[in-house]
Length: 358
Ligand SMILES: [Fe+2]
Image 1 (cartoon, rainbow, N blue to C red):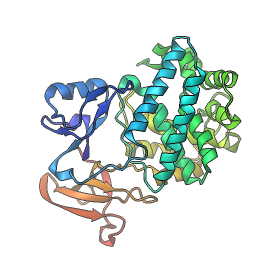
Image 2 (image 1 turned 135 degrees about the horizontal axis):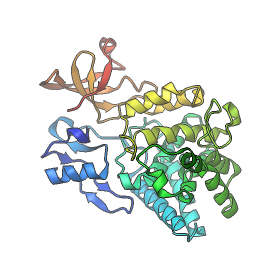
Image 3 (image 1 turned 90 degrees about the vertical axis):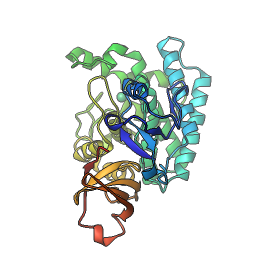
């Protein structure tokens, strides 16, 4: 399969993955032929693109860090919790137990796939942003945690903080969170209260590890002290706060929001790189960059020699030098062949210059 950005989807393409919303309902089934009405629906749903199956990419599989089933169950559970809280019925002991079990499962799956690079182009439905975002931030944070050799107990505490990091948003009016125009100063000040509100709510209600509460409280602090709520800097910010801040920004940037379009993974990776040492802890950024690919498997990329290839494999620690299946030269189709930008020295003078819109 390969990834096609939403503006490049053509009629007749075959969907390669089931699409769900946060209730776990099917939106479109794998194998569906994309007619114009479906393409319009994909646009309306706010998806950044879809995976399609075609002759060129049939042997390319997208390795995933956690199973689709676990992801959907976690997204649905988080949605249930947010809805309960918004409706005033509060978070129950059962909700909390469900979350802790899911975090355990996610940690186990991430440890089992520790050799993998994150190949995530997340297909999240616009209206369900917060729930998908919570799960993605958890996966990304745990990948960094594994790269730092945290043990299983530490990973569990980190995963719990990441999954619940934005729970304080239920105490902020939705119209502010989804405001398409620039926020007024007092509106922004209100949004900035969500880390503390989430921290306070959980601390009063549930017995969690202290590092978990603190990670939630500090997920908007910045390495240079320009974040919130307390403007603390450097290593005064807890490890979990520093990790979650990177994952949170990366996943937010790659999502379509009411006030801006989604960035591609490579653009978001560059943003994280640019923020190394100012917004983010530079040591953690270098760990993040080893594990998160700017060109996930299935992306079509344009090379400096004017060839176009589909990323077929990513190597940890060398995310800019994937294995590719070359399919075009300029606008002309070529007989497909593989090119290994990491292991074939003859390719070392070729670079990826961007996403190819094919
Ligand atoms: Fe947040």
